[in-house]
Image (cartoon, rainbow, N blue to C red):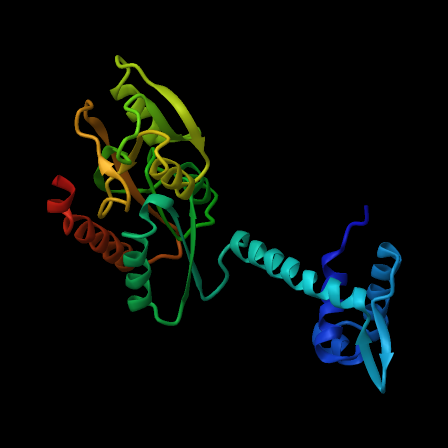
Length: 279
């Protein structure tokens, strides 16, 4: 099976967009010979013609139209992955955060950074807490929010309640858990060590945990950050789960005044829903 090269696909899509090799070469900062070579190699690898003469310009064959449509999707996914994984550059700040903080806390961090540094673009990366910690340890995140053991130079923000949640009618013994490593999982399992239970599903991300629990597959332990997720209710007849600490970590590019403002905003935000968390 042929392997499609990203630069060659980019050349083809650009040729299709500007209807010519020379303007495509100018747009890509390549020579016309390099762009033509990319197209020829694609045609050789796939065994079909992609371009044809069309008046004074160049048009796409039927196969060319098919490939360009798919290539645009591939390039979008490729470029998004590169942007997501690239370290922040000048004029950018990267906020890495546990998925649990996405809806209720990350907007507070972004708004605080935008207010203090309107000239800076703020990027957000949501992932598991252990991976947030790795980004922090590798100096790839400017601001990191994690539910895990503290990273170097991190600040304790608050101790977050953990509750068992389930959909109506779910089994009281079936569990829906994050796959390891997971600080919430360890605390939750320790709290019910003397009770009958089994792991019905292990999930890699928060959206899958929520969807699985909403579908009635079992109970799931979640940090209570903000309102309860739709479709789930708190299970009250189980032993309490110890709180999990929320930490913030800051990179060297974040000034002391900005760090203090972010910490204050997070603590203020977490204080707002106290009455709802108790309900």
